[in-house]
Length: 118
Image (tube, rainbow, N blue to C red):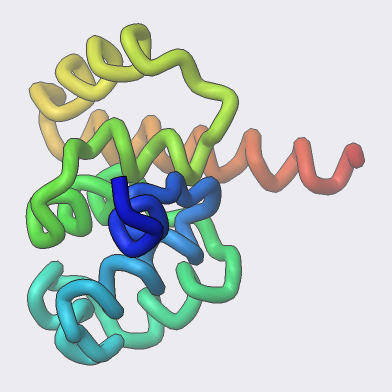
């Protein structure tokens, strides 16, 4: 494998790095990524600065960028087991919207409490 290909194959470990790499490879601006994924430009800026996306926005990013949603989520929550994550995602995606909103609200609350307790 040539050094050029090795560089492209490098594994990104954060959502921020992944999004920057994806935008560079696809020649996308932040505005183009936001429009294509159906996410506000300010929200994309937040992701580039370390904000965690909702599961719905993980789905939107994965669909637009053509990568598995599990890839995006594993960057957001790096300690998640891949196989378990895939089954959880399938269950989540089949829930009614109000249940997904409830789960995301609970996850946000738990994350905020965990950050305060560090």
